[in-house]
Image (cartoon, rainbow, N blue to C red; front, side, top):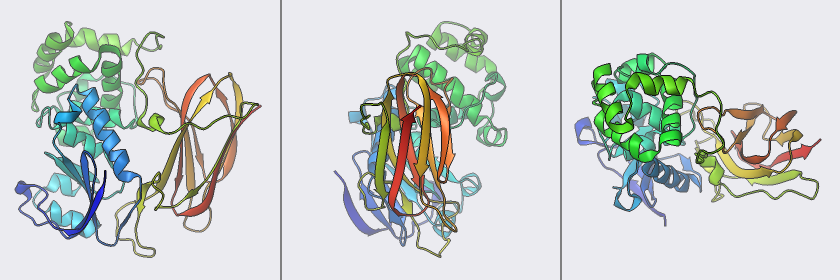
Length: 363
């Protein structure tokens, strides 16, 4: 259930000593979503934030029923600067989370919501684990590499040192291969300011092996066993498209912010009051029955100052090994080899549109 309250003004966190600008708010089951006046929030955004919060709780072995309500603030550049006036780190970031509340420049910043859930397990977790977990839940970028050089960095160090993708990949491995319970114990036990001795002690307690042994096991895991439980993308919870008799998929839809399935938000035309970009997003899944080449076509909003994008990605398999199968920009057609299995399809547009279309045609 969601309810809208207008012109709400509250403090983001006590430490900020700043009064939040007036905002509108939509109350979700787990997330209260606030946004600056003049912005337009799309109909499916809060439900997607609730889903992100649930997934984060499950992967940290937390009871969803016992979670505290968290908040996200989508703010204009001026409002965002006011909130973090006394926190230079957060002020310089695209988004930031403190305790149960977070704020960002973008309508879709689920990374920050993951932090507010994880903070209910350990508010002072090691930055490598905190950032790696947040990006793992939302399927952020990944990068191969030895995790040990990044484990002891502080939050500025891991941001400046581009450690997020390395941490994200390693965390996905731990979650899928060893499960949520062990990872939750590790998340609790490694201190925020840590050295490799701290890490080794916590790894031995949670996984029964040394830090070096666990790291080497991970680095050697370059093939996907068939026996692992699935760790699907959040987008894979979307409704399924039905194939025709030939195994082809056709999906035509509008892209309107009022649609209860559309995620994202819009800013007033001609008023660049939001740092960065906003977009609209629709999600579906497809089930590929036969291996082969598929011609993927997408038609998304075109024209001066606009562009679209489609992302097709494997849902299952090994989460630390998979990447996007296809990223199509604008309106284009490409041929891709697809193995049997479930895939997410995400259509993005940077303006509203009466019609967007996706096709996957077996060759």
